[in-house]
Image (tube, rainbow, N blue to C red; front, top):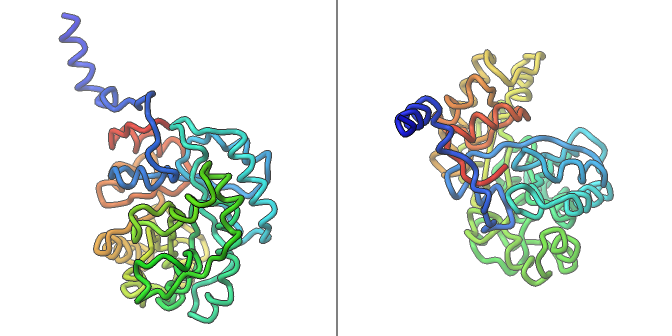
Length: 314
């Protein structure tokens, strides 16, 4: 009788079979890459603060933290303090030294020269030990190439025939290596873009967030070194004249079609698609192909993680 009750409970509550593994041992520095390689969606929250906010978020429910300097003052000192706080407040429940941190910068991917002139911002962000950068207004494939180039060291050879040689310099590895908990030499080896470099621990993303970017989305998402992309529904809508800033359904028809196009291209080029998820639609969105759940809602993430039978603790 007891066995029958347990089987019935398991059928009615399948999440019982998907409990996190309390003995989990991290296999990578970047928690998000580890999850994506397992086919597991990831979820994020947002921050813009210093040491105390870092300590507070060190054990966040989220897999990564978007650090927004696109619309906040550009302050790499504050970012460095934030990363120090994450380390001091860690590790994460999964055993990783910190959650992932992906920075959004005020440099825009409008064209090659603009991106090349702003490459220093990418390099400053990475020197603080973050795990990735998300490029706004990725309108031009040449800008995206310069974006990837700015994130790489000059000895990395994969994709150089398209991207050119990386431009990060000696000395950028010291503090970042401390944040990652590895030696400076090891940091130089693994601080490369994934999935172009399977051993890389950096994630670069692009925002196809206006109609101009959408026109060249096929060429942009074919650039090697990009790990994820989104259609930026709020900014996409703004580019069509919608001022509400909606990211959840119902969105304007142009925004909906843009999302479908970017999702299809992400599948084609085997990169992760980012879009908003809600508790009531997260399962559907995962089935459609969303691999990075935006919206900054823990309840959505909890439902999604149970649905995909995630084993890594959160």
